[in-house]
Length: 221
Ligand code: CDP
Image (cartoon, rainbow, N blue to C red):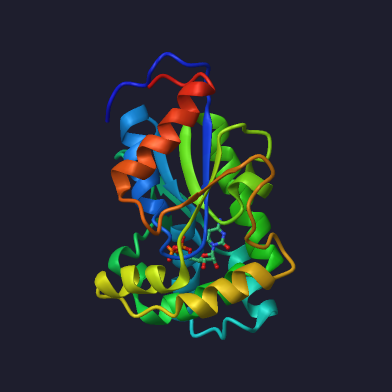
């Protein structure tokens, strides 16, 4: 990883948006270019969903899910450029992208107990070091005070096509509906976020827009 550049620490760049909008690619590249840690909070919700399913628990059984949460340890391996989520010391790896995880993650993510636990873990990370953190509620809930907020979007048919091109089975329409309509921390652009529609832009073009704004805000590009 590149050495951290001389900015006041820690700096939080918040990148939110719906499924397959391109936010992960932007967040990963931006983190590498800034020398910050990349944190994909979706991977945390996916990892706990995997844990729920491994334990044979129905994701809709909120009491059982909350009880499992009490006995689950979340760890982060921050040795590389991207934080790797560990559940009771185990990296679920490729299981995070499985169709069954994708089909159940929004149900788990709607559970307020799960959200408050993961939000606390995310805040602790961002308080310790500069991060580019991506998710659904980073600018609205996790770090509302950061001035560096982006909402990455794309037309639904483009997002579905991007996910299929990755060879993944994922009903992004259902997840979007659940993520925007839930009571706890629904997906919506944060106040002050720059909204970028990536439908007709490639990654480099989106990065240029993001970096231009961050530079205007005083970050070193
Ligand atoms: O990468 P993709 O856009 O497919 O989704 P993800 O970032 O891996 O997130 C998976 C799911 O986790 C989302 O559909 C949300 O239900 C949930 N999530 C959330 O509620 N809050 C976050 N900060 C991040 C993800």
